[in-house]
Length: 261
Image (cartoon, rainbow, N blue to C red; front, side):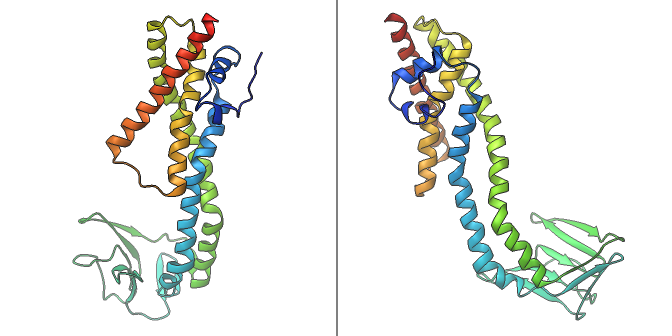
């Protein structure tokens, strides 16, 4: 009979042999619901950090950028502005040139210019890297106007909803990634179980692997929340592997001890 609920391992996986035995012998399935809850919790700090960054940009930096944007009317494959002259859009902090809007014909390419984007009367030029420039003609059926007010409204929508949309997508993709990761770690658990002669099915090993990943993921989420700098990539990977494999050994031994009782 199942003794612990789906949320108990979120805390008990750090220290309790009993929860690993319960997961191995009393739970069923592949712990997909548990991993979903775990991923949802551990991805929340990233979503919060992203939301704060977007909010800071929208409220402090974006207004200074938007103030430089002219009224831009796209119709019949042509762009018109209130004045036929070059408009320069610069980074408010560094002063670096970001974009040029010029329907006068004075600026016809990005060659030799630091800007990343150039809007002319009939085409937009996009710089990729240091040398590649993509040229796109405006759609003939386009009929819309870009104003500062509309840009501000779009930015307001992004501030409110972008983090939530990104969070939902990240939970889905990270869940798939963690399921595959648990599959790989469970093979290591299978090898160790054979060494210690633990009578555990592969399904049980997969479930305790999902629980054994919990401490490493929770610790990483806490580090993101408090803003502790991450170790260099090779060290971070080594620490993650060491923590997961250490708890896997702990879990298999806990189940082996349970068999002996």
